[in-house]
Image (cartoon, rainbow, N blue to C red; front, side):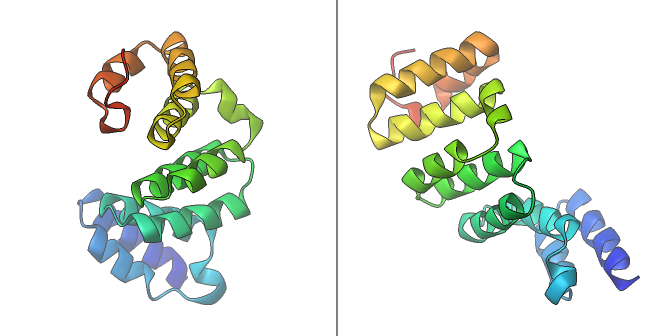
Length: 153
């Protein structure tokens, strides 16, 4: 009962754009309650809203372990790792996700960003081409993405 109340309150804080308050609500949940998927998802949303990349990385990786078939968790974990400065780890995380990721343009786009950052220019360009081929709106994003500076687009 308490867990549901806490989840409802934390969700409300997030909807109001108050991630610190959401995290404060969730902090009362410990043990199994604090490790429930819904709790971790809210925690991740709040941490990402705060741009607390190291903690968000940890939370997202826990979610990957709980739901290895959920592509979104691998995208989030990789993104958080990259933002935390662990781009090589981000690439490994993304590539370790479920096969369905390969059907998503955002997978190829994010992989292009990680590869470009790591200096693998040819593969970065190849993955960006795949992403744009799947969804041409990624071309506009690539033109202004700080991770793709210097790439001829």
